[in-house]
Image 1 (cartoon, each protein chain N blue to C red):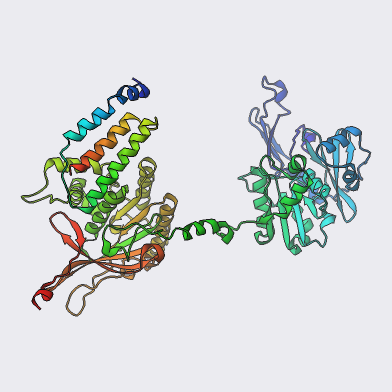
Image 2 (tube, helix red, strand yellow; image 1 turned 90 degrees about the vertical axis):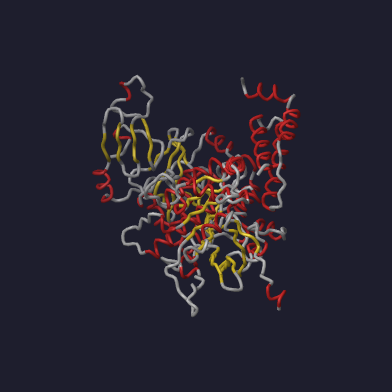
Length: 76
Length: 556
């Protein structure tokens, strides 16, 4: 399957996939300034990747990697 | 003898040229293959097909001894076709007459006058074949016209010189042999014609170099400016799509030619930048009042030490006072606050698994040992995130050198885009001194290398270096070492951008880690030297803002 086909087939379910991942993640609250700053940064980075993905400038793999990184950080 | 008498026909009058071999080309299938390499300057040739080689050397020796030949003045009766050929190049008949341009058997002749006499004739065909008179004197074309001139314009060829004459410039000369091949070191004989105008060039106040805008032209311009003196050389900038003066004249007219000569700018001197070159960048900096380095993540240090790219910081301190720990903590802060990516060589923390756990502890803010140590899930999550930001380098080699660290950092930078490089510590690297090189000179050389690497790759380099020996104060406590106490050389302080000492201050009243900043090169953006106090949590290895003990405040 080519990169483009992969992107097209997953585009419809993107929001569902995102919400499923979000609700299944048990975020740990933190008072650590640096951890909070990194979480915010990764969230913003994920938003940017999503916009890029919608404009065809990023692949699904990048979108997923960015989401994973942000949600992983939320659990630390 | 000449090349032509050997059956070798060349277009250029200097440099290296490939042409057909008179011995084998006519017998080959690939008859047009230029298999004969000819070095015109040296007068030698070699055929890569049949192996025929030879030279003019013997003849050249004879020629040197033989008297110079003065050719006759060329016939100036130009046929209509030649006049129209010049006309297409915007050179008028008047100029041709004034300059004594001649014509003979398909060859246009440019006479070289010296003291009113023709001393050489350069001939060319319409398809750019060139030749000069045998045993004639080498001198600049139009050399008589620059006597007593304060400004001299030098062009690469006669057509460019005539173009400038057409535009009203008289103080124009041109090189008899054209440009030189880029990347070669032409012999002095190639530039022997410079002697013909030695007095004029030495006494001139300004020499404008109007060479072609191509690689040979640039090489020629560089070599001439080097010989004449760059302090008085200027060069011209051609409009887009033009490669020489004649091009400008044909495409844009005389006014534009005058403009480019008027706007000739001084030749840049290596390593020297004029104010004009950086004015805009400086103004940009001025208009950004908040242009500061990045915070370390500890507010108490913001006034003393901020981090900017393209700099080198050396961190020192008495052993076991927490240099590496502080460095790791700073790295984690930079990862968390600014998503910086690091390459780290940390020999004292091998094997890497120990180091990684320490970093995970700092990253997650949880202890990595003891009963309440972090969970496996937290550790795995932390490592998954850190994997994008931290790469360990120099883990395989037995003898790691500064060069191998920089090689690996260069590759990491290419693949991941590093922002920071940590070398911890200096004394575990294998130092390769050059023959007869002192330690001071070695340190100076390597720091220069690190500075260049940091600037070229726009990353910040931290080097951890130990002081030469521990000095004690009156209370038998170690004295805070300065940058000049670092083992090896005073250059540690002199040649780095920032110098920091990590020192633990512990007594009955207080216990803190002092971050002593003793040097900041760019204080307007990175803070002024001073001291910050941090507290250290031994469980997770994190540093916090130090809270003064308030025992006395509470209990008087």
